[in-house]
Image 1 (cartoon, rainbow, N blue to C red):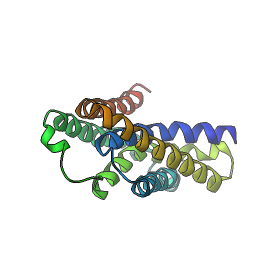
Image 2: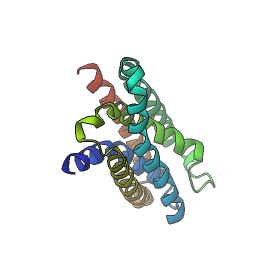
Image 3: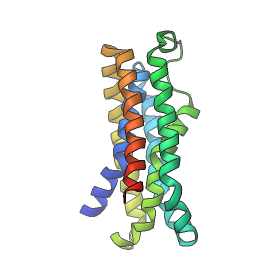
Image 4: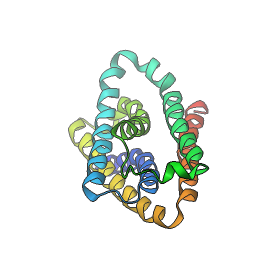
Length: 184
């Protein structure tokens, strides 16, 4: 169980960082909307290893060869967009109070791509794949919810500077995924 918990926390850190950035961007997001976003992140993060496990039986080399590039491109693109918005304050004061579901989905997919590759290693933790997926999903849900709320508090105080930092944070996450895979 300890290994499952470590795996869950490790996979959830990207989602946490991305959710802080979303919270910064949308500081007045309702708890219900935050919970919905966290549920989406948790579900995707929990199912991604299963997808990796199932696909890995047939396409292990292909998935491992490109997952880091997809994650980097998605997260860097989102990060660059946030950085651009930080220099264009009029985009930060739009009447939209919550992120679009398309933006949430893109971020959740970007942070879950790595978890797909991790699915190949699930056999190392025993035969209890359903429990592993459940724990990953729950931990990601909780950390994403915390990240959204913390980001909202930070955003109210720092505005566009937090948006800028969040953008660099997403780029750093993507770059870390890329560098880790390229140097492994």
